Amino acid sequence: MLREGFPALNEFIDIESALAQAVASLEPVSESPRLDAELLLARALDVSRSYLFAHPEDTLDPAASERFFSVVDRRAAGEPIAYITGEREFWSMNLMVSPATLVPRPETELLVERALMLIPRKANMRILDLGTGSGAIALAIARERPLCEIIATDASAEALAIARQNARQLDVANVVFHHGNWTDPVRGQQFNLVVSNPPYVRADDPQLKTLRHEPASALASGSDGLDAIRHIAATAADTLTDDGTLMLEHGSEQQQQVADILRRCGWTEIECVSDYAGLPRVTVARPAK
Ligand code: GLN
Image 1 (spheres, helix red, strand yellow):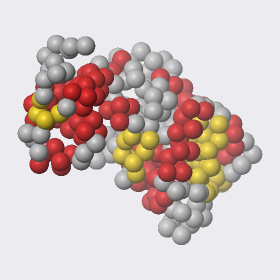
Image 2 (cartoon, helix red, strand yellow; image 1 turned 30 degrees about the vertical axis):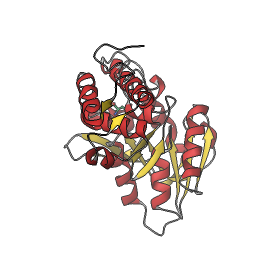
Image 3 (cartoon, protein in one colour; image 1 turned 45 degrees about the horizontal axis):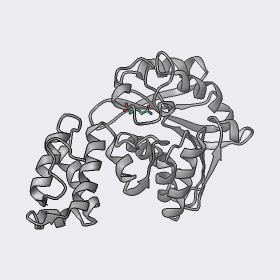
Image 4 (cartoon, protein in one colour; image 1 turned 60 degrees about the vertical axis):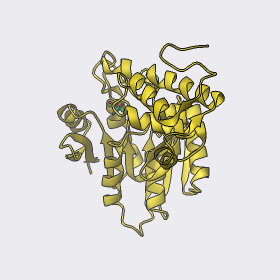
């Protein structure tokens, strides 16, 4: 099959030209077309990115060319690069991802960073991660704090399969994954810290169209985007010790609404933390005594 603008399969094309053609077709959908093209070509050729820089005039054989341009097509159709490569880096871990999991975002590293500030290095605290997805937050904390016991829940069995595989791959033994909604699987248990990156996008947010390859259940949460946060605010206190802490990621324009929801549910010491771009992203609260 010939694609317009792409080389015929019996034509040999060199690395630099292949990259240039891919960049042209990725420019409309990607903020990093060159990086995307390099990552995809390195995989198609099974070489490192630095090999590409060192050998720009190497030619691609027709099979490699087909492999490369077919994934460029997928990316050009809006599929996240992480789903094509099957992995995404988060907190220096190479995490496996699939369309059943949200692609871990760099902004979620702020939540991990703030959580670690509350967990002394030698502490053996119990930590709960609600809606763990690929396991990004739970695994990052587990690796940084090996004496802690982390329980992570998710309503998606497919997502949990990925999270468990990530734990095996990273040799993390102090996380246990449970299938179920939010705190349901841990009813009656108590934790020192509850963390979550719940869905928080408004159901009618036009942004969801560009995120259509990712699971809607991990992104959208009712007409104002706050259904999941309301649910967690109403239920998470039962799973916390009296001196425990709740930590939630949310949209940068939801700071006030999140604080109001928490206050109405009886939470105290509500505090919002901003990311490096100065955007309020994580809210911390404590249960009423
Ligand atoms: N930060 C994500 C985005 O807006 C949303 C993640 C989420 O809903 N938890 O792309």
